[in-house]
Each structure stands twice: as structure tokens, then as C-alpha cells.
Image (cartoon, rainbow, N blue to C red; front, side):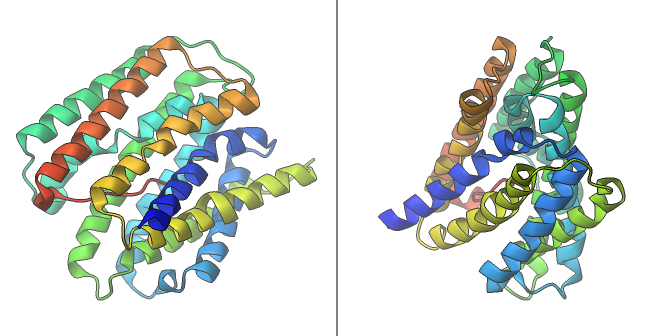
Length: 292
């Protein structure tokens, strides 16, 4: 069990390096997103045999929402702080409050409304804050909009995975969807990714790291860890991702989010933790989900 916990935590740590890595390359957002997903698709196919079942049309349908999430997240990181990008993406459960009844016919519970209200409050702090641009965050307002959009598309992806679980013929549909999503993200970015000019060896290395380790190896660790770690415990361990994401950019790139952004992030983290705790009290209400 302890080894499984370490694997889930390792996945969260790898996920959390995305912001700093994306910002450290001179490649454009389209190039970074496209190369990362192209490498990730190959890595997932090689590392996870269960992720190779790509004949299910539902995997590609839900994968389209996940592909947009991947691309929007990179766009956000190139323009705003990594703290803003990851925390605004983490507001996906608030969107699910609307998508759940519409797409899944699931009625929201009272505690879901409270969580959604807290997430919306945290998002408001980000979107109404006035942060100065910096070398690592040249256009925070636009980047915040990309990040908010990634939260919306991530909510569609989560709803799709839940829908897919009801109809899929195999238990590994989620992994197939992750692979399909990366393939689609690479294809989506292709028209804007070329030509690649003035790329250094470090830029190619960062793209390789993002695809192989930040996505491929991270999902390998996560899938193995989840075999023994309960959903509640896994969801708490995975909170290390939004916590550490801005820490890496601060340590490596000296990027410091504003006070209002930190307050918004704190609200979102507390809401996420409380939601996970309430799900533990009522196990039938749902489980954990992994972010990108």
C-alpha cells in the first residue's frame, strides 16, 4: 500500500512540473502543446498497453474535450502565471454543476452547490485581480481567459469520462481517452506549429520531458497507484499538483503570483479538499479524478 501511495504522489509531482516546464521553453504555445501531446501519445501507447484500445469512438469523442484542455492549458501558461492557470483549471467541478444535469441527468446535491459557489468565488478573485505582466506572464488577463476555458473543457472531459464508463465495453476506457486526446491535441496544433525556427536543444528536451514524464510516466504511476489507494486518499494526494505547480515556477523562474491570486487559489484548494472529504462520508456519490 505504501508503494502505491508513493506512486500516486509521484504522479502528482510530475503533473505539477507542467507550468514551469512550459514556461522554460522558447517554443510557442502551439509548438509546445503540439510536441508535448505528440510525444505523450507515443509514450502512453508504449508504457500502458491498456491505453491502446483506440477503436472505441467514444474515446475519440471524449478525447476531443481533453485535447482542448491540453491546448488551452499550455496557452494559459504562456500568458499568465502558472498559479492562475492551474487553479482556474481546477474550477471544473463548478461547471459540472451545470453539465451534470444536462448531459448525465445527475441532480446536484446541496453540498455540491456550496462547493460550486466557493469555486466560483475563487475564480472571481483571479479574473477581477489586476496583476502586472512579467517575463513569464506577459498577458495575465488573456491567459486567465484561456485558463478558465481549460476548466470548462476539462469539465466536459470529466463528464464524458463518466458517461463513457456507463457504456464502454472495457474498464480502461479512460486511458484510451487520454491517448486519443493527446493525438487530437497534436493534430489540432499542427497548422500553427510549423515552421519551428531557432529552437535550441533545451527546447526539444523540454518538449520531450513534458510528453514522456509529465504526462506518460505520470499516468503510468497513477494507474498503478490507484490499484490499491482508495479514491479519497488518491484525491488528497493529487492535490499536491495545484499546490506545487506555482512553487516550481517560483523556485525555477522566480514567478510570483499576486496576493489576490493566492487568495483565490486557497479558496479553490479548500473547496476541493472539502468536496473530497464529503465524498468520503458518502462513498456512493463519486470518486477521484486525475487532472492533466
